[in-house]
Image 1 (cartoon, protein in one colour):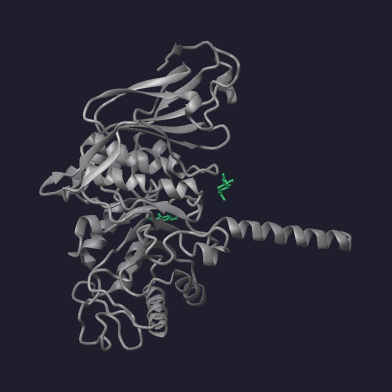
Image 2: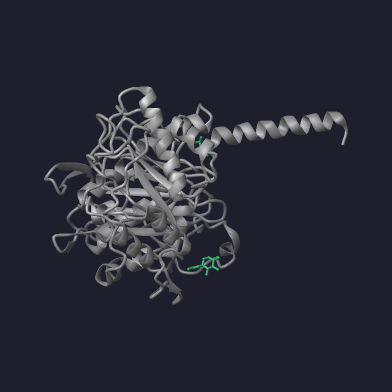
Length: 463
Ligand SMILES: *[C@@H]1O[C@H](CO)[C@@H](O)[C@H](O)[C@H]1NC(C)=O
Ligand SMILES: *[C@@H]1O[C@H](CO)[C@@H](O)[C@H](O)[C@H]1NC(C)=O
């Protein structure tokens, strides 16, 4: 190669490198939305090592099958990360530094050894099952408000040292104490950890807290030194709260701030969560919840008791739907969200009695990439069943009607039922029960071989 060519190649490579740097977090993790499980919704503050290890076993249990009849564990489906949430710390420890609750003078975190006698053993156990293990810091229960930048840095450094010592793979950094400096945290991970650490930024989408959202004008180690970030406050055990949290991703999606390596996240799921002996969500609500988290490219973090047969039976078909998961993982430059909604707004009440006002109907979509069509979710939050119409020309990237050919039909597939519904011209209408959602793949008529089998089952369907 001529010298000038070498120089041109190097310049081109550098340009490519810098444009990639500006595009995504560069720790190599969460290039698609991560899948896993986290402890808060099930155990709350009442958590310990045996409980987490039991969940780890449950994540790898193959006593159920996927849709094709193959014995399948949650980890086989991709849910391979198990995260420990708040309350592992020895609160008000006598070892704590003056004015601190659970950090020593040298900044190191103090683990409650009655509850977690061997954190490293717990992580090793997860690894032996091919799982990864996530931890949690800047805790909310029993918080530590470091008092100056030096003290905060000392705690961040010592927290990262502890992550490395125990072998954790991930870290949820909450917004309660003083350790809110995510870029500084990332610096210490790069300095001290032999492997990248998957980071959840839990600053609740709250502009009052530093680093609550990415800044794509900065290089990733400054602009998104985490892998997914909360767009909302905590999700609660009610359909209203789930629907409310869903809405919070819209503003980030609209600014293209949810993308590979840096996903907006409306919180772990309430799928299969039980309160007072009852499932919080109906089957219909579970479909709406899971389907919408899929279409907006949210991390899919379960939080139900994966070892309780009754609970697992109720949600298995929904959470083990490989087509739904594939739609969650697909990314073609747009993280997905609402493309249309009803003018009518309704009131729902969450578990605390708070009023949540949301559109009665929301229509969500996400392009799945060349050849793969568009994911569409027709959601009915109203009290009555309703026929909802997916009008093709309104669905971004669907392409179907814009061919100047009336017979150009779109293939519509029912994702919940794993079957093609046929070819439709103009729109597809589905009767959607109260709080339910139709989950569809809509594929353009010009794509692939489907163009060949023209004339089959062309159904006229208009608003
Ligand atoms: C873990 O993964 C390895 C490599 O894919 C496989 O050989 C092994 O059987 C897996 N172990 C378990 C417990 O699933
Ligand atoms: C949004 O970001 C993605 C990933 O960086 C990029 O591919 C896409 O072109 C962006 N879309 C817009 C509308 O800027």
